[in-house]
Image 1 (cartoon, rainbow, N blue to C red):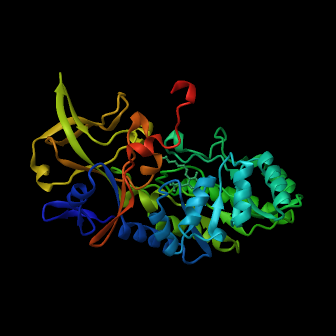
Image 2 (cartoon, rainbow, N blue to C red):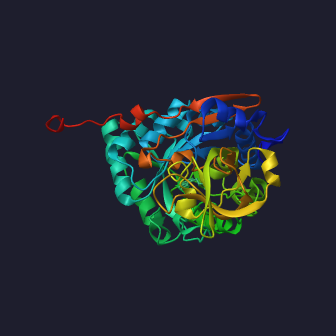
Image 3 (tube, rainbow, N blue to C red):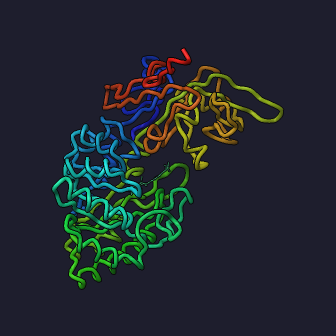
Amino acid sequence: MHHFSYKNGEYHCENVPLAQIAEDVGTPFYCYSHATLLRHFTVFDEAFSEIEHIVCFAVKANSNLAVLSLLGKAGGGADIVSGGELFRALSAGISPDKIVYAGVGKTREEIRQALNVGVMMFNVESSQELLTIDAVSAQVGVKARVALRVNPNVDAKTHPYISTGLKENKFGIGFDTAIEEYRLAAGLKNVEVVGIHKHIGSQITQVAPFVDALEKTLGLVAQLKDDGIPIRYIDMGGGLGITYKDETPPQPKELAEQIAPMLKGTGCCVVFEPGRVIAGNSGALVTRVLYTKTNDAKSFIIVDAAMNDMARPSLYGSYQGIVPVNESALGYKKVSADVVGPICETGDFLAKDRVLPAFKQGELLSVMSAGAYGFTMSSNYNSRCRVPEILVNGDRYDVVRERETYEDLVRGESIPDYLS
Ligand code: LLP
């Protein structure tokens, strides 16, 4: 469910017409709905009310400070994967004791920063990382709380690029060696073993992979207990999918019905790291038609947003819904067209062979399900300025990140004196 809809013939985010924002700030822009973000967070959080838990939003999905701040105010923590994400989470007012830190390649400096502020726990992905955390903790003079990220070898049945729980993926520690790694961790002086972590992939549309991975994880938790290594936190990772087109992923409540009873008896606090399910359908990318053309048999709608603004279609072949901002366009005759951007690459498209109204030059389109992995994956490719982010709340909207300028594009660059 989201708060984008037609009112009086115009597509709105909550009570604000997208055309109004386009007139004020120009196009393209990302637009997020406060009500949708809050609703998704609350629905997820309440689904697990029966068990002790914390929802740590995956910052990589949408790292805008306003978004993090609103989720933090709603009681959320943060799942981070870099020093930059730590900085963002703290800047948004999220308390360090609600921050979990994952990622296969944490640097010593990043580890030091996280230790200095006292994050809730590190999700450790290799023994070398474990030893490094131990060494840095000794220097800093603190004990690091750690969970080991285990790889349960479960097929999440999702796109190969976002599947993480298989043996051949780079993530986590193999199940077979996990006990040994835990023993190593338990013997380290500057590390306190507190948890276990798993994350099997993203855009998962079935409950079964979560249940399978949890079953395996709970087996390990029981073994660890017998081994004298009690676990306080079970981190379930993220991964719950959303509807982009016609997928029917489980609702958080349906997931909870299956896994909460399994978790209840453990006495552990359960950490969740949802990203997409909170932010995905809370956002849209609004773009304007620059030109339309038909080459031989093929029609193109050329818009002012491109693969640098939204990488998902080019990178994963993702489907993003496309909605006319002016409702009357729904009555136009239909064409099958590629919606493409101005970038000089054939891979620059937002939709391929899509049946759409025959849009006219200057019209606005809303590219849907863009609130997660949209802006955060954007770049300056082709020296294009990154677009603004807008947060709508009821009747008001705020520019929560300004459009970049040409000066921003060259900030930090210089020409050596022998060239000037
Ligand atoms: N926790 C960990 C350790 C993760 O690696 C991820 C996502 C999440 C949580 C959040 O997963 P979510 O609930 O959003 O599925 N760029 C891709 C998605 C990459 C996901 C990477 N990890 C896309 O646009 O589909």
